[in-house]
Length: 198
Image (cartoon, rainbow, N blue to C red; front, side, top):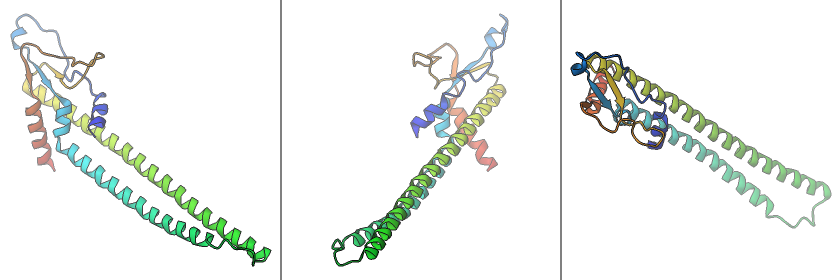
């Protein structure tokens, strides 16, 4: 799941705030902060709840798949038992043809059951993955909007995403004078605000 989180986070802008021209007199009041969006994302209770929901749904999908596999085992057993009678010398041509038709029907039923199982399993997992991506993207959007609002209320002029990476895989902001890390404060406020709404 962490790899999935990391891949989703590439869609988040590295700079969550906007800069504006600053005069010499305003320079002392210019406030810069940093927030680790990935850390906020992982600590957010909506993310945890989504992960739990996804895990429960995966268990349900696997349980349904096991039930169909049990039906397939019964079909395999029928085919095996039916094929044990190899001495067909005492059968008429019509009886031989009937046996061959029965065997073909059993095999067709078994193969159809397996095709339906594979199709259902893939569709269910693909839909779950798509729903999860949509939900996680929505959560990231909520976090970004919250950080923007929090930054404005707190008087920060620029807020950087400390979890982002540049083309050479290093953080876009490695350090700087006066940069305040507001990650912990954002996590506390975000979870508190959301919890009171629910």
